[in-house]
Length: 206
Image (cartoon, rainbow, N blue to C red):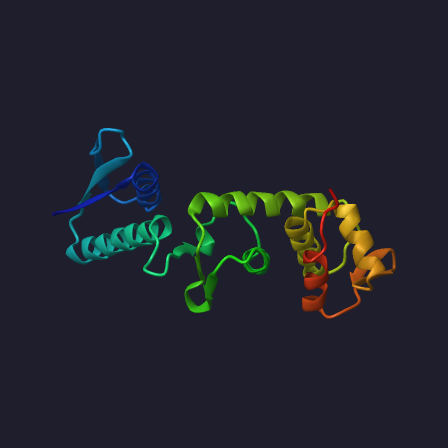
């Protein structure tokens, strides 16, 4: 038995669909061709094989779900928002930090808890760049004696939004009473939301 699924899209879309389907380790084959003269649009044909009708049906549904997820990632809905599965993000950054980065960057977004999905008015490439920036700051933070995760998130988002250096943000946080030093560690000393507002509203001097 065989089922055939055809889908068109950008090169990014079709490549990602093939990669995700391949990870399912199904008995299938891929055929592709370029549809546009500039090579930006291509189409793929996925041929799915199997002897068990029910399993073939379930595998077909799984592939269609992948196609839907990828399409929603690269194509905005009517509100101009793209849909991202947080489990599929290439750069590992914690959810709260991502949401804060979008909030303080004034990027329209919505988190769907039951599906662990993020809807945001930001393209896949822009989101990837944002995540890489956050991860880089977070790695730098490992060299400092910071306490809890909320404190770390507040400092990272402060550096990202304000453009200040890590040392400057830490100094500002201590001066403003956001943090205090306790047992050789920097810990929270104020409501976390107020801390984020203070750090994010600070400006880098030119």
